[in-house]
Amino acid sequence: MRERDGTSLGHLDERTAVLMLHGRSVPALAGFDLDFKSYSWSDALAKAGYDVFMMDLQGSGLSPRPKMDDPRNVNPAQQILLKPRPPGFTPGPPNYPFQLTNSISDRDDLNAVVDWIIRERGVKKVALIGWSAAAFTMGPYAVKNPGKVSSLFLLAPIFPPEGTSDAPDPLPQPGFPMFVSTKDGTWNGWGNEVHCADQREDEMRDQVWNAIMASDPVGATWGKVGEGLNRIRNFVRWGWNKTTAAQDRVLGGSVPVLIAYGEYDRQANTSSEDRELNFSVPALYNAVAGDHKLMVKLDCAGHSVVWEMQHNNVHNLSKHWLKHLKVDGKTNGIFTMNTNGDISPAP
Image 1 (cartoon, rainbow, N blue to C red):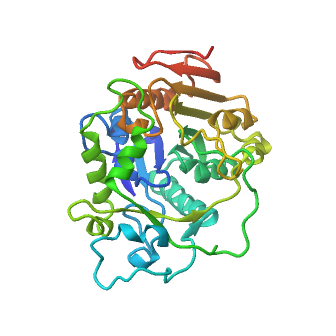
Image 2: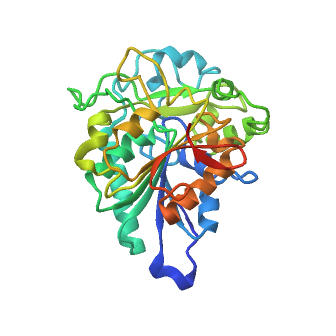
């Protein structure tokens, strides 16, 4: 966990604590605290007076990564990427033939950090900000713990409206502990959602990858020399769907919700016959049963908007949300934001 405390000494009793949680493949610091130009979201919030915390779940970033130092525990279909071979490595079945974490362990990680912030910083509640697959953890957590959560901001949330509610049996689930991704694969996958001039800077290819590698000292030594591989934990999830989002009218009720996503995001909006992989951001907005809910579609933005030209507008949107819990003066509705940061009701 990293903290950027922007609370001034004269306002400690008014401290607003914010906790930021990463998605599936990008660790917290690369996503929220990129040390390049104006891309650090956490720094923008700290400069606005917030006490900002960023956490890595087990298996991600600088948190413990059990079973992930063993290259045999890479997805067998991806072990071909481990060239040159790490010392002593011979391709084959995983030595730990299970997925690494699950919805229970992830929510326990989140709860431990929330409880620590409340205790150590003397706040009553914590404002949650999550990107992408963070929704799997933060959404159900807020539903179950409204007394600890002041608000929920979900950027490009992954939401399967018909996803399963039940834990699989047995746990841990068979499989392997981790995937890996390459620098080119990461950049090119992001590029599939680039459709506007100047949507992203070419420099970001190196800036983002170097930040990911700085949070993965073992992965940095694997694969292509001088480049490395991003180790991505394999986790099994459940309990985040239209039933959960509507439960007891917590979301949009005692926990106000703001959802934002890019118009070209094809990771948070998919079309799949597999209900576990059929994701929809608008379906999440519709599923939230409370009235205090807002959704903003960001023009010329993809899933990786935190590293795109719209990033400053996302920072400003989150600062306004944390202060007012409104968009365009309203607590309910669907809006669009252009590249100048202007907000208007969706047509």
